[in-house]
Image 1: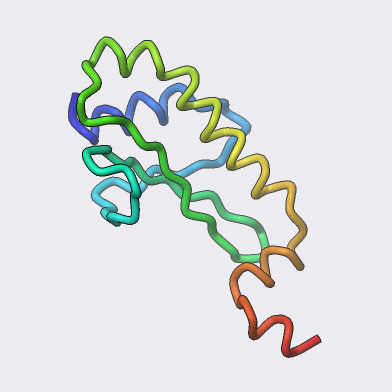
Image 2: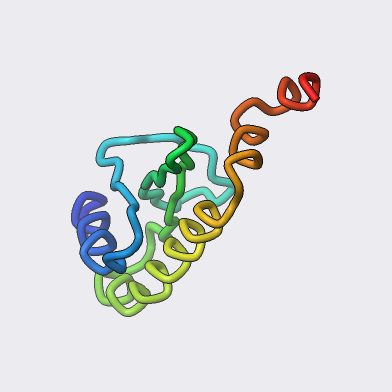
Length: 105
């Protein structure tokens, strides 16, 4: 299963109330797990802050194993998105600005 197919399967399985956007072609290798494939998504708040979410799958997993794990992968992604959405816009601003946000307080 290609990364694009995996991303499509995950996107198709997401709940309709979760506004998660797939980021096809986005590549960032920050994984501590060598040999893992990362699939990226984003979620936005009305305040303009966006979060980068990802799903990691071992490169050794078969298509059958990935399909079997799909509900768990989708559930974790939805949990991350809901957690981000539940945060206040003030918290998003502090995340976005980091130490600069504290200096302005």
